Length: 82
Image (cartoon, rainbow, N blue to C red; front, side, top):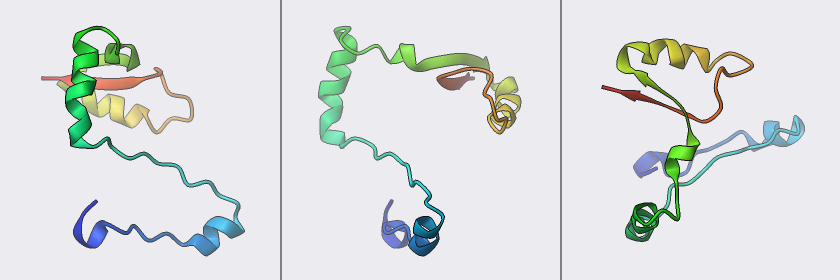
């Protein structure tokens, strides 16, 4: 996140009082992309194993709505193709 959004403020008093967990992720640095892509190219990384489902763009809305269900229909990442 950049600019005004670089420091995402959270109500830490409520997080602590309600014993909440704050989870998230951070993207990798662009300088590491060539090594990662080389690992994909030579078969050491298999990102396709993370995919749960591939759907047509027409189905994307339905799939996005299904993500709100308590139990997802599929594990993994859903990719919509054009």
